[in-house]
Image 1: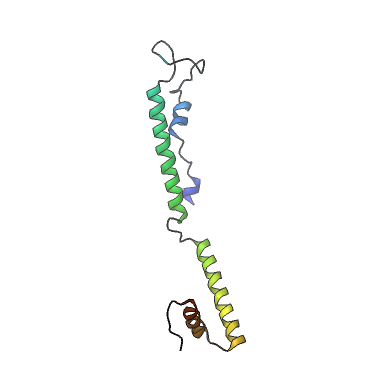
Image 2: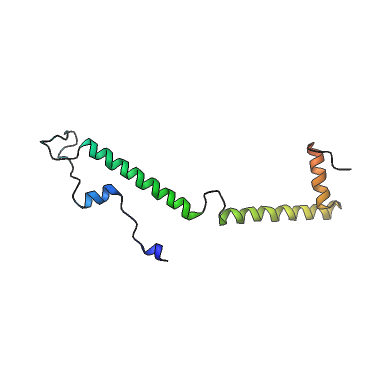
Length: 120
């Protein structure tokens, strides 16, 4: 509950812009020199690296909080459970229709696929 109330952190470049540390050039084609007020290339590179780091950490935190690092989340578990229930239902209906038990059906399938000769 408290996590939702916290304000998300602002990116470093946006925070610097809000506090007036970043000033834009008067014209986009004008080069930043000691005589021209503006942002140096080194400053832009450092801010870009900080922004990359910030967004990578934010993405990692999002993935970690969602619990889907290894694919084990609630949605996948529900889907897997539904597939298992459908497989068991099909096996029971086949057993009812043919008279072959569910275990014998699996043995027969393995034998037909040529994986092993276990059906007598």
